[in-house]
Image (cartoon, rainbow, N blue to C red; front, side, top):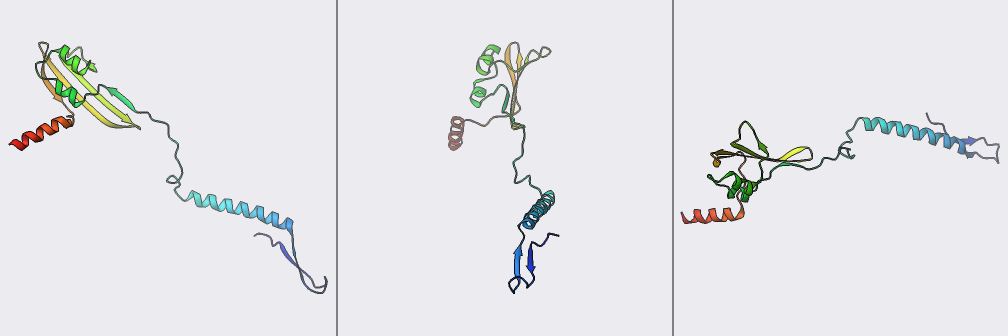
Length: 158
């Protein structure tokens, strides 16, 4: 227990009781009190979850863009029957050209932000005799504003 730093002196001093304060005792009590407060704080802190209140230190994760980004405007430019050079002019070189499947071009795109995939696209083009024969669009894009208004106008006429 903490020491008592106050002392009551007997009546023999000036005929009445004097209360004396021991400063050295207070310093010792103050030091012990600090140790007690720190110990109790550490014990209480170990029982709680401070991860919600304290900042966490994580490595910086950069935005990673991989592949060919194909916009809806670019996708609208390609049509079945176009040549390979016309496709390259519209979309750029494919990300994957397989030597075993020379008539297949894959356009892949992936956006990773903070360690998770935000956006992913896959467009596969199949050629026969140097001309586009089939389009496999695994992730259809949202229509552009011009295409949306045209479609709404067409629906309004029906």
